[in-house]
Image (cartoon, rainbow, N blue to C red):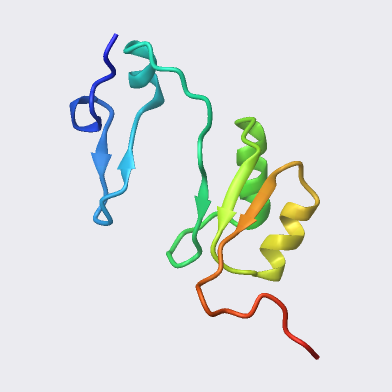
Amino acid sequence: MRVPTCRQLPGLRETTLCEKHINLDSLERYGATITSLDINYGQVADNLLSPTQLVALLSSLNLTKIRIYNTNPQVLSTFANSNIEVIVTVPNGSPLIEEP
């Protein structure tokens, strides 16, 4: 069975950043299998979940991986005490280690 494009799925909406949000139930109706789900936790917005709330939400959904875009100590320490794998993305040219 051919899986439809994102624009053909009834649960789709586009944000101003052109991110595609798909209702996962819609995919199951077409026989699609989801093998992984990427979660990105950017912190440049209003009304964000706290790191503790986010860990609780991801854990309740059995999600085990997240990507963050900075090295916020509060976020890193919260995820360090969870079973969630964290990928940290840093811009090109950013020092990964600073000498004292």
